[in-house]
Amino acid sequence: MRKASSIQGVLRRIALIVLSEPISYRLLHYFTRQRPSPVRETASDHRKILPQEDVELWVYWSEVPNGRGPAASLFVLREEVLRFDCFGGSEGHMHLNPVQQRFSGGDVARLYFPDGSCAEHVDRAAFEIIANTNAALRSNRLSRIRNFVIDQNALADASNHLRHHMRELLERRPVGELADAHTSATVGPS
Image (cartoon, rainbow, N blue to C red; front, side, top):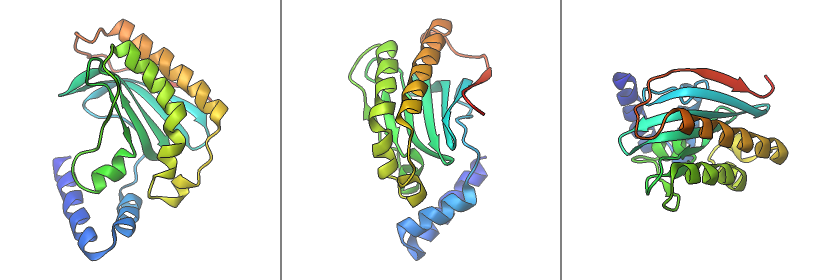
């Protein structure tokens, strides 16, 4: 896994030298596109919500060095456009277009939630997914993402599912305990 990511890093740097950033990003995206999934060593207890065709919202438990708690990733046309980390305290945050930010080099920018409990961050994530999905789409480098039309009613319904599942995760896994269960479920039309 590390070898593949280091090869991608070298290819990214070469592409940025030879080609413009938008063209480099499209090419890298084309050749490295994968099935949308937050499946990482740091994520467990996944639930996939399908608000509409070509949109997937993954809700899961995340454990990373800066926090643990419920998290979610919104994919549109297989591109992650929003990510939410509901860690409570001062660590809860969201990311807009994290893949393209990582491509541009360096860390993925975080937009921090106001200090609060994990439950308050869950409510904030449910609000932000409705309020900022269109902004995330419009700011994406890929024209197919910028031009994608989100069904706001379906997104609002998905936001309610997100809130419900994240609260279930908090009930089952208090933030002070390490997560070890790996379960999966899907909600919505297939």
